[in-house]
Structures are given as C-alpha cells and as structure tokens.
View 1 (cartoon, rainbow, N blue to C red):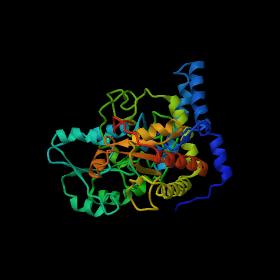
View 2: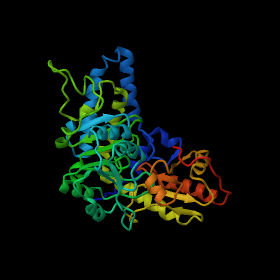
View 3: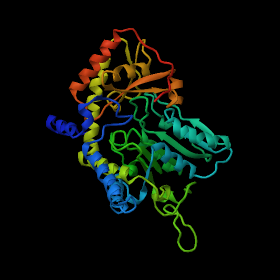
View 4: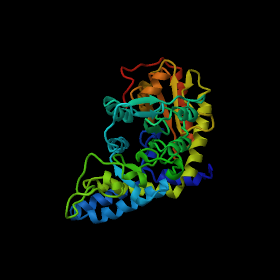
Length: 411
C-alpha cells in the first residue's frame, strides 16, 4: 500500500537536517543522494575514535555499529542479518556473487531483461566467452520484461535469470516478484539488481523470491559512497564459492580454512568502519521514515514533474512503464540539446540532474535508438518550490539554441 502522509513541517525538518539542501537543488538522487547531518556525524565520530585511540582499537565500537547496520539492512529487506553482506559498490557485490556461481559450460543460458545494467552484462560476458548464451527476454507492451515470454524461454539449460528491477535510464518498474515466481517454480537462480529500488520501493526478498539482491547505498538510501548491500538467500549460499577469500570469509579452524556459513563469506577483514558507521545511520533513518511512505511521496512528486514536463515545448519523456506506476527516475530529451550538455548547463545554476548514455544500459538504449537521456531523480526531500526552479530553468533552456557534447557515455 502506498502511503502519502507527509506534512510540510516534517519535510522542512528533514531538509534542515540535510546540509546539501541549502546548497543545491538536487534532482540526482539516482546517482547519489544527499546524506543527513546525522550520517556525517556518525562517520566523523568513528573517524575521530580511530585518530584518538588507534584504528584497530576503535574497531570494537566500529564492529558494534557494523552489526547495527547489518540488522537495519535485514529489516529493510525482510531478511535475517546472516543473509546480509556489505560491499564497496553494487557492481562489486553483483560481480562477486556471479563469479561465485563457478565455471560456465557451453550451452548454458542466461536470461536477462533488456534493461540490464552494463556492469552486470560485463560480468556475464566472461561466461559467454566460456560458451554460455546470453539471451534477452522480450518486453511487453509497456516496455517491461514480459513474464509470459520468460516462461516460454525456460528449459533445462537456463542457469540464471538476471533482472535490473528499476532501470537507470527511466521510470520503468519491472515485475520482479512475478519473475521470481517463474524462477522458483523452475528451480533457476535469480539475481536482482535493486540499485535504484533500495530506499525508494519496499523490498521484501521473501516476496521477490530472489537468490541474490544487491544495491549501492549512496542512492535513495542516502548512505555514504563506497557502501552497498548484498543479500544472499540462506539455502542458496552453499552453492556459491567466492573467488577471493581471507581470514574473515574463510577463517582458520585449526585444521584448515573453512568458508563462513553466512553471507559474510563475501566480505574481507579490511573495510572502512567509518563508512559503515554512516551506513548504519542512513539505514536506520530510512527504516524509521518507512519505505512505503517514501514511495508515496516520490510517486506524487514524480507524477507532477512528468505532467509539467509535457507542457514544455521540445521536451519528450523517454520513460517506459505504466503511467502512474512508474518510479522516481524521469527520463527525457530536450530538442537540440545533448543530455550531458544540458546536465552541465543546469549545474551552473546549482541544479543537479543526471544523464545516461548508451554505455550504462546498452541493450535498451540501442533497442530504442537513444544515444543519451537526461534524468531527473526525485527524493522525499524535494519540494514544490524546487520543482518550480527546475521547470523554469528547463523552459528557459528550451527557448535557447541547443548544445552538443563530444560524449554520450560519461557519468
């Protein structure tokens, strides 16, 4: 159920507790959101402890904060703490889990949505070199992954179904739960890239039916850059053998080195407890606010922006998915303007948006013949006043001669 019961007072308080809100008009939350002052202070305290008493000695308090973060992540995903590992990025988490599946053989099949993140595809390319086949699941009439088409593609050679739940290049929300039902029914491994979903949509791994789910925490969760979550289903864990091991992931038991029996077999003993301290606070803030409430506010603001963008001459929305059921990522193009040049021009006025080139979601961008899109990504922190500033700036640029860029694949 979508809940939207935010008061102006609550939003004002959250913005006052977020330093960046007074500095920029930020609509790039899908790239990285603005951390709260409390998250910054949590990191500063751990950093100061390390300076005061020594980094290893400060690890005692750091370890406590790490377990708080693990419990908060488990609460967010409706999982158990032992199913949660932390990583430096979503790509690193996905790559580690994929590599842990072991060698691929000729004829084995990987089924992916057309919207798959390029970093995941890069990992799969290694399996293709070994003879595996990477196949794209057709889309339905809304542009989403077609569950009925997926069902027809299943045979005994399918080893993995991989889904980017919310693509980085627009507002589509893929039917992750329905795809999970297909995967479970046929006993096929199912990986979800939830990078844009974490902190924006409720994520219940039990309902999703996934074996692996990952996502960076810097986006809608408002965590520090360099942190990510990796969920591994308990019954699936024993099938995964990580490539890189150390004294944490495979400790010495007196006889030899034995893999841990929890998701921390994907972690190493050397990690930033400063970043983990910030992650713990960001996760607790998201859980306290309630993800269903966050979803309601984001959807309301995103719907308003989409409606208003349609009134600006030269702007064309490039979103997929059912209207009214899309995410807070709004993809568009402005006639005569390169997406990256547009992003840079708005940044000169302290307005942050994103831009995505073909290199990030190549299968979908090529299928739709889109070299690049500009992207507005909404948070519960955004206000009607900020929306007005953004729309006024875009309307002004729509009246100016366009600008081009030399690249369509930059971050």
